[in-house]
Length: 401
Image 1 (spheres, rainbow, N blue to C red):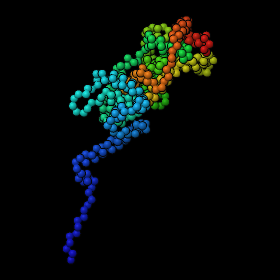
Image 2: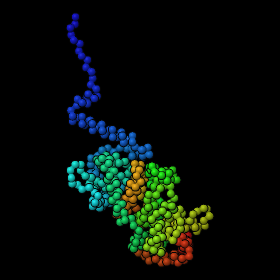
Image 3: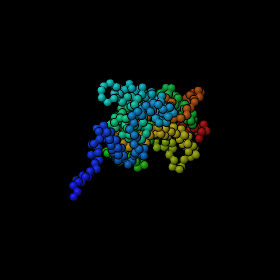
Image 4: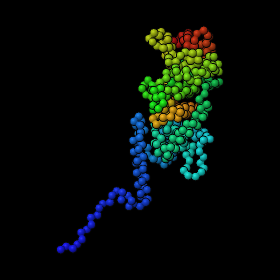
C-alpha cells in the first residue's frame, strides 16, 4: 500500500494576486502606466467625429517641450511655431507685465511661466490640437491648458486698440500710396470683406449659425490696409447673415456716417465686392447680370485687383493660425470671439515685426504722394455723382478702362 500523500496541486496566481504581490513601488509604476493608457483611450473615444485627423492623434506626455523649442534653430522654430523667434520674445516680454499673470512665488505646484503661456497659446491657435493634447505636450493639466489660452487671449484683446486702429496722418498717406501703386486708384484706405470661422452648432439659435455652405460658422468682417494689416474688425455675427447685413449691423457702418470727416476726410474711401452697396465712403464693384459694358467690366477687373489684398490677408491669417479653420472643442461663443480677435491682434503684431511668412515688400516712389493729392482732387471734382461713378469717369478719362 502506497502511504505517500499526493502533492497538492498549486493553482496559478490570478492577475490581481500577482499585482498585489509586487512591491509598493512597482505597483505605483504599473498604476501610472494604466492611467496613461486609460486617458489616451478616453480622449480617443470622446473626440468629436468632426475633429480632423491631427486632432485624433494623441501627443505623448512631454516634460520639457518648451526647452525643445528653445533649442531649435531660428528656421525650425519658425516652421513649428509659424512665428519668428523675435516676435515671440517681444510678445512674451509684453505679456510678462500683464497684471493677471500669476507670479512665481508661493508653494505647491509650480506656476506656468509667461514664456510657456505664450508658447502654449501660439501652439493652440497655430494647430488643430485639443486642450488635452496641448496639456500633454507642455506637461500641464487639461484645465491649465484651457486657462492659459483664455488668459493670453484676454490679454491680446486688451491691447487691441494699440494694434487694430484706423490709419491717420503718415500711416494714412502710406497706405493710400501703396494702393495707388497697384492699379492707379487714388484715395483708397482699405479693402473690406468677410470670412467665416467654423464652429460647432451652438445650443441657442442654432439655425442662425447655419451658413449657405451647410456648416456652422461665425462671421469675421475686416477692413485691411495695403500691408495686409487689420484696421477694423467686426466679429460675432451668425454665419447665415449676408455680408451687407453684417456691415449694416457693425460699428463701422455707424461711425462712417457719424464720423465721416474724421475717418475719410471727405476724399478717401474703402472698396468692397459687389455684395456691398455704393456709398460716399465705400465703392463696390458693378453687379454683373450679363449687361455690363466693356468699360464697366474693365472697371471691375481693376477694382478686383486692388481688392485682392483682403483675400490674401484672410489666406495668410488662416494659413498661419489654423485653429481658425474650425473650432471643434469650444462651444462658448464669447470665448471663441476672444480667441479670434486675439489672433487678429497677433497677426498685426507679426506684420509690425516684419514677420510675414515671405510676403513681399513694396518700395514707395517719393513722388507718388504729391501725385495722389492731385488725383484725389480730380476724382472728387463732380460732387453730383456718387463715388463709384466719379471713380469710373476718372479711370476712363485716364485711359485705364
